[in-house]
View 1: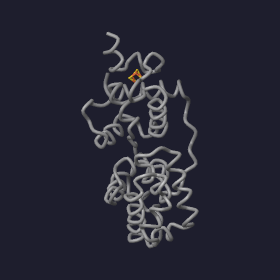
View 2: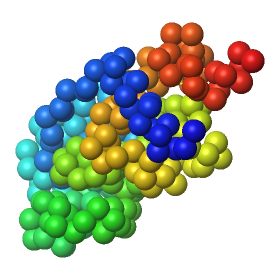
View 3: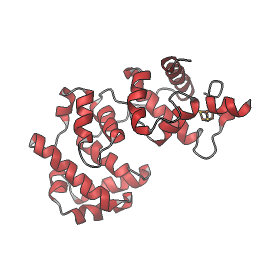
Length: 221
Ligand code: SF4
């Protein structure tokens, strides 16, 4: 099956199975960027704790930007890798100020997706996943974030080439899904990856994609 046709089939099947995901109330783009940097290599609970703590300690982004890195590290330590994430957050906020005078990423909206991605990924510590999350969730721009779950599920089901890395998968999946499907497809693939297509032990017999999944078809034959 052609990738576009398969993507459409996956999207529809997941919508039937899970329903359309609720629209997540968005953070501001700058807050989404900070939150996504905090989420690297940790779970949502630890990320949210660190984010809340950071906001409590420094109520404005300007204060975070101007704070000594050690104080930011201290505030976000529940997120793990705080020694990396603290300076990255400070640097990202400084880069935004250098461009805009204030801490706002709204200018990305007028740039178009590819230029906006490039602007974000030029910031040290901001990769394609983080950039796509900021664009999709905070700016409602058509970008498709590929996290570990999306990457695993799309590989097993046979939607993307098996040897394609996560970084390249962003542009590939943006081509095969339509922009109006990005939000729901992204969230439903994550849900499937967390609940059914788990890394170690996928529960294929109860999976809504099992009748056309390459991984499962190879196993049952
Ligand atoms: S059938 Fe199995 S391997 Fe395929 S997507 Fe579903 S859970 Fe994952």
